[in-house]
Length: 113
Length: 116
Image (cartoon, rainbow over all chains, first blue to last red):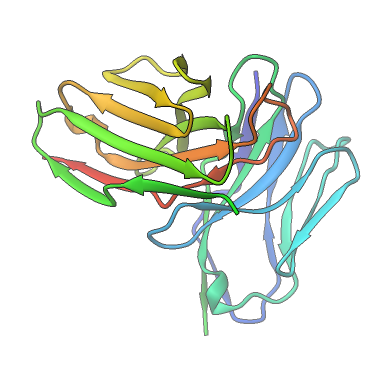
């Protein structure tokens, strides 16, 4: 079946630090990969996505590269801000009549000034 | 542009009471619709999804049910709430038609349900 594994949180960083949140997956079929972000008290927002191997998704300074050889989609940002404090979810879909989207458990990021 | 609404935003209900959460989408036709639950420490769990009026797929057996009485309306219900039903309920939509692996889901603001 399909599954997503994210690094355990919480992650606490100082402002302007480099961020990496690891995400690895297992999938039957060819997955598309997503990162969603959830700010406090809100729903989820799509942050970026990649639909084929070696694609790089990017948005708001965040990047993630679809690595088929390592089955990974790690999220990175060169310089985090306090406003980036949120919960980040890695997700995949390989819809073939079963569960259309599978999420990781989420990683809480706290950025301190 | 498309928007998705959920209500109520927060809800406190006693054990054994009924539940009805509503989700509506504007600005698109025949969307695919989804209900998720986010429980503390358990991540995001898909509960139901629908590709059309009256078509509901259930992912997890439980005392919840879903209905889609209109094209852009998705309702989550329960006849008798359990303590374990507490959580943050999220509705989402994606472009209609056959669900493909490249589809992006767009989420509503969520309903926080506390069962006492």
